Image (cartoon, rainbow, N blue to C red; front, top):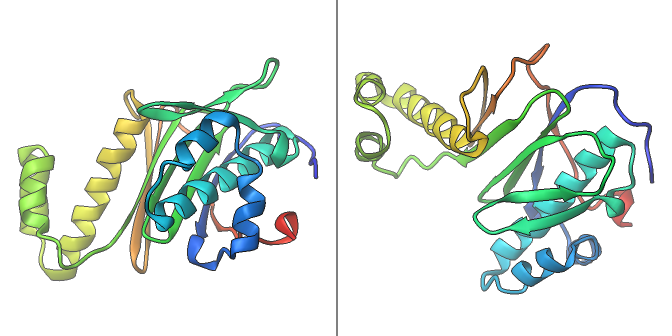
Length: 211
């Protein structure tokens, strides 16, 4: 179903893929383009295939909402080693990024700025001090090390998500937005400042559009 295009704005959506049934998964797989199907068919793990299809469904619904299109009409093309590209002449420029961790899939799309996103499920069993020393600059690693207990875990994942989101953005960030949720952390980095921090919306996949 088409919607009226948004004049401006940035959307930030998160979905739980564990709630996605097989019938809905098959329905969303029908939205994939040839290059996406080629990649999807090569995933050996069912969870990774589920993440991929759910992520592309969420992204299509988001872009469709921004541009006033039907989700099935949003054409994406694979780019090895990069995010997919939006295909179609005459469409407004849309900055978008996606990420997954465990059952969670997150997407951000913006008419206002290029964006990068990362979501990470919190794993308290990880050696976060060793990872911080490897991944962060000395000042950031020291700041994480100076924290205690739960604050250290939150600090590590905050910086980790910002690092990964910055890599996806691929340029200097003018605005960062971090969202802490029980069980995971999410970060969005923007090349240009936004009028307001994006509202985090939880989206149920497999609803009316996959009925």
